[in-house]
Image (cartoon, rainbow, N blue to C red; front, side):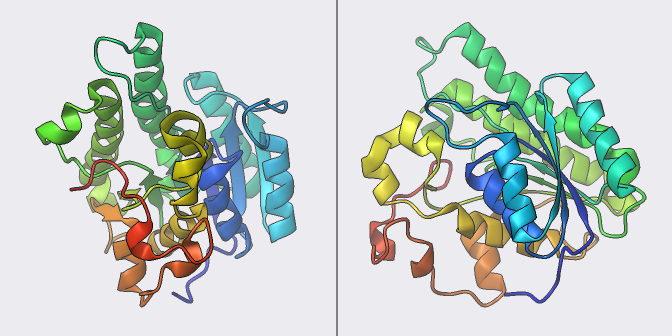
Length: 279
């Protein structure tokens, strides 16, 4: 793994109360990073582990400095508040992590209109608006990064046709990120997407996609967090506009054994379930 550090860097993240977002936050916190979490879960949820407050406590325990902002990435005032809190508390913003995302794999005839709107608002609009709100501060940062947890633009019939509404939302998230990369490359702001080759043991996998069976053949969020750390500590001017794959990123820094990331220890790599959007 790289020796680079996020010590003293300020990260603004959408979501992060649990799962992949929390894992990324804790990996950065171990370096001594400042983490501003913009998340909705103020009180415990019957089906979801953790709140924005327990996540903030975990950041402290890991060695970081948190700010918990109870809010919704769909709300421009909440976005502005998260950005303002980051700047007033820590003096600026170095990194934006677009983690918040909504998933619904229903077919086009079954997906509810409200869920379609929710996916577009959180995944696409939220990614664009949070990144845009932070840009004036990213432009002043030493090594500014935008990282979105979104897939490569694999617009084959296989993936567009599988769950059109969700595919549109995730590809929109990717397009927003890659568009910002192109627009601000000359000004030194990196923007990349990051996606895993296998399913990750999260609430979405358990509650929406495949239940406990799929959880047992997934990898832990730590693999995503370690790859994100590599990306976010890379020189912004040298790594931007890329659709990155978690395992490829880790292999680029010498990691060739992913067995420690298995959700169930001892599960062989060839038994881990492949994620969507990758052929």
